[in-house]
Amino acid sequence: QVQLVESGGGLVQTGGSLRLSCAASGRSFSSYDMGWFRQAPGKEREFVAGINWRGRNQYYANSAEGRFTISRDSAKDTVYLQMNSLKLEDTAVYYCAAGSGAYSGRAYSSPAWVDYWGKGTLVTVSS
Image (cartoon, rainbow, N blue to C red; front, side, top):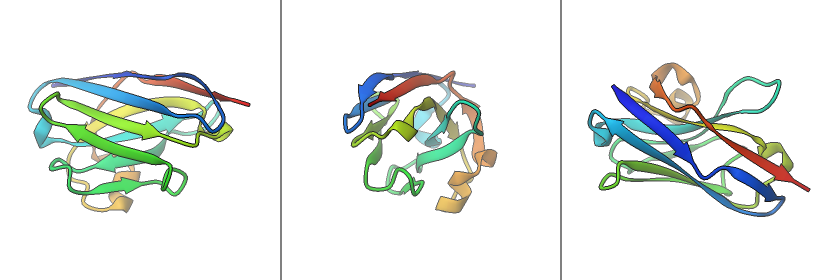
């Protein structure tokens, strides 16, 4: 079992930045692929960013490319999502995900590889 706890969400103005953190506990964090998904009100959960277990490969949704950066610190069992140039449409609950078996951007974009989910952290972008 892996427990994931997100933090760092909050209220920010358009163009601002936030850094989300996801602290993992339980089984070996370093062996899991990690990712972030988000769900806006009235919409389905969607992929935002993913990073493989070694931290060598990162994948992004088109909406996140160039603005968001995913990273991981195995010494701290934590994965981060740095979000810059935030837009109104980035408003959502952001969920941390852990799993395995995703070997491409397309694979990461589907939640089929996810074994564990966090409870989410709310990001609200205002004008």
